[in-house]
Length: 369
Image (tube, rainbow, N blue to C red; front, side):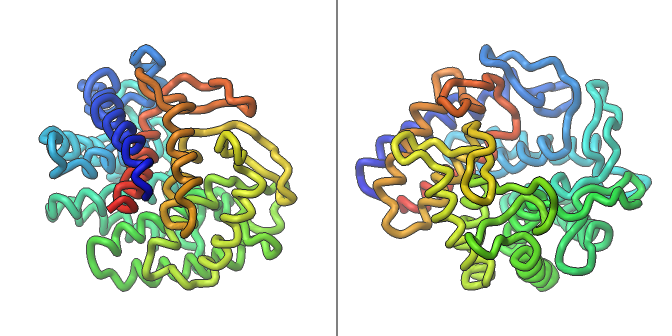
């Protein structure tokens, strides 16, 4: 990374560690339930709770696990331990196995369905947490999540159902891109911390099936629904997120899916990124027409992270780092969404967003190193 990026990187890292992380230790923390509130408003007050999701708990577990052992983060191990306990206490389904989607504000199960997105993040968070603490109980939960995904969600062709009933009966949801991407991320996190032939085989089968069922042949883009589904679209942010996962993995680099997403990156950049402001659009039709011009902070972060693995992207990376800093980060936190004109359209700050910032900044730090 050129030296010009270093002050910007230092600025966003300081903002993250001195402002964003403490939000979820203080005003964003419900001490009674030992869970993060779902979101804070612009004045750091929790939005009135409607629910608490297992996925949000898992993302915060990842956030604090990622800080264990970092200078000035003595708090991280204790908070991660509390979040891990809360994940089991509040969301684990003792009767049917797996984890509920959400609980109500009183801590009772609310949406009892089992969704792949939640389970993928439990795998991801537990793998990262176990890498730091090596506690047998954490590995046993990781193993249980991997097992339930393989046994309950798998459709037998490398793909997985997006949502099932509490008792694992079918809801005919079929596979969807986003949960499958995060499952791939969970498999990769598992393989980063241990040898696991089952997880590796499942990851490769998933990559093969995604190539066959979700990749548009003309542009290589990853569609949100399987090919042939009505009202399909693609999201630039997801092309960048997939590209990073594939490019950074020794297992996946060189697969047909990797080749497709390398092409998709260029097409998504051409059609979905404003080359002056650096704004990343939300949703595009296959021909590149913008269907939703909303600029979301997670997509900005994923584009920035992906650029660290694209040779010759130094100038664009510098632009994107400044764009993130100027348009999305501020002295009270961050802007979750801007509209197509760049005007703030969502001022609330969800507990799930620091995960995207943490993974983005880790990518930048590794690139700098």
